[in-house]
Image 1 (cartoon, rainbow, N blue to C red):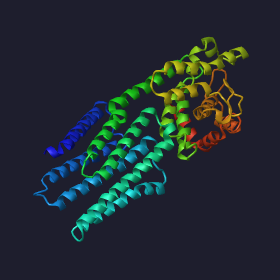
Image 2 (image 1 turned 120 degrees about the horizontal axis):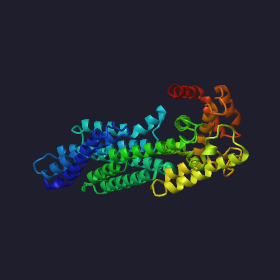
Image 3 (image 1 turned 120 degrees about the vertical axis):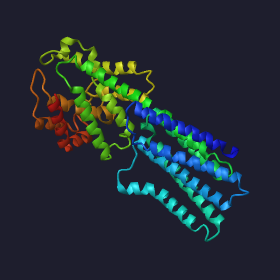
Image 4 (image 1 turned 60 degrees about the horizontal axis):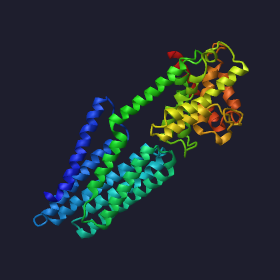
Length: 430
């Protein structure tokens, strides 16, 4: 039994992770996350079990047939390849890179399916020809498949690097490094079994950095605090009740629609959209510095008052930088800053506060600008009634390429049915 102490230790760790993972899911009343982590946890556990059984049989090679030992080794290798494949799917999911087209889905499954077929065929023919040859073929099949998915994963990681959250960068880099190291060692030193260590380290790292239900609960509290803070600021302005929720909903609609169409695909990753949805409620945070006499004025602002109102964009950016400088989430801080400071910039460079134009304006702020203007004109104010929706869409259309990024404006116009449905839902609840 001493030969499988490593696998036993790894198995204990995975069983402990499984226990606290499902305990915390029940504790926080959270549903299973559709991230492939549960599948990874299950197949990782099975892999370590068969690795241990293989080691036990090897220690009794004097009384156990070498054919049986090799069959268990083959099953372990298949399971290990399963871990690599599911890990690849997990990485695609958390980076928002899961393919949408059927053809691409088939392509990423091909190496795994081909490998499984070859292994099964070798098992069926194992007693009809040279066992050692078939076993060696199966081993190399597994290693080739593992190498392919590692290369695919590294390519995806490098391509999406800039738009992946810092904590996910660390997690992905760690498990890719560990997986590559373990696979290389296993290829060149097949008598040394380190795969179980690699599987355990990878799953433990993913759990601690990404999938811990307690960590997700803290993130949810953070999001609720952001929305609460934004609503508190909004309540000072009698003109814009519900503005935060509506604009955030329009931003979500725009970003997801653009992502689904492959627009700005290198930027609109899953993490980018998640950060944008968290930052959107903070776009008017600078209004906390605007005097009540201006913010609550029941009528149009004069030139001096309007100049003071415009300062909310600068103040908003400053507040974000100060409030979130120690948060440790640089991606979210930058996103919130850009949304707060630049959501009044215009595509033609005539906006404020910095007079940015075109692609100089951060994409998140360009999306926010369309949502912000549409909500402003489609809702009632104390100094005017809500404009008809036809007029609201005309404003967005006429601003395409002038006030707004034409790609974003055209996307917004093209999904008018969805926008009108969302607008109607808000009207029914207010």
